Length: 185
View (cartoon, rainbow, N blue to C red):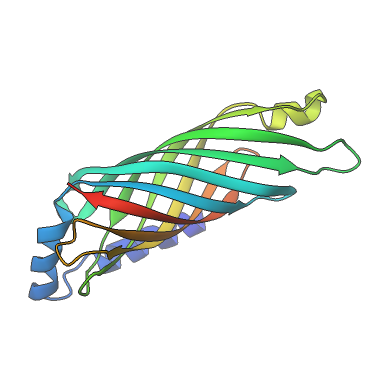
């Protein structure tokens, strides 16, 4: 909880305008809806081969063009090893909503940070009920992230993204590194 409070405090600090020029450039780019896809690797305790992919869309702004509302979906698959029990695998489909703050943009680079909530739908192939219960069902989770958008063209219509995201959900906390592509409409 302290991490989320610290992240919120950072969002408030960066919310003040850095300069009139930065704010004007930010308004031109930030109000355009953004669609993105990503591929990532997640670190999960006692798990390996954890690959995730998904998509997100910035659908609007909240109070200022720099604070964006995003909706996304993510799929994660992983193998686990919990000796002395047999190994197995699980998967998770997440649906989430985020608030993303883009405090400034310097030329074609726009860093961002944010937080959100998600629903995590899990399934697994474990035979042992105690393990199967850990990786099964629906859980609510919180997430925090930092990232950067880099325009691939001078008009800012498309580009690349990189993100570090931590998710805290019942029995399945993780930190992931994602790379992706985006398109501004």
